[in-house]
Length: 133
Figure 1 (cartoon, rainbow, N blue to C red):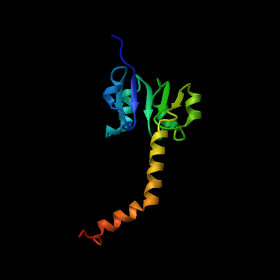
Figure 2: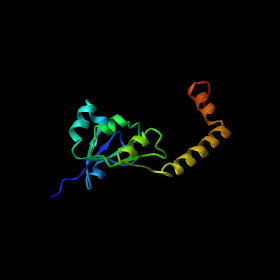
Figure 3: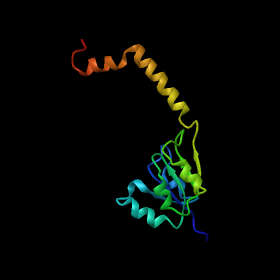
Figure 4: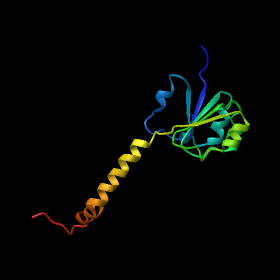
């Protein structure tokens, strides 16, 4: 049986557990490692992709010579050294639109909270100045 490619996951994903990765790859949880540099050395021979939600530098890419894909779980890739990735032939992708509905929900919630003064009312009740009679 062919060995599954390694995928470095830098932080927990929003709605995806590592078990969901295991069908098609061997995930490596960087955030669980007490020695991230050591983990990078260990996974270097088989790590073909990185799934991340944070900074990924050229130095980190150098430690993973088999790397072919950097996938950002977010709407942009500002924290990835894209030029360094391109220079190494590594594709960089992201998940545009993944937060669109959440941002819209939050915007509506903030409008309602501001219009109804929900935060001020909560603070008033929690302060003990309001009493039910």
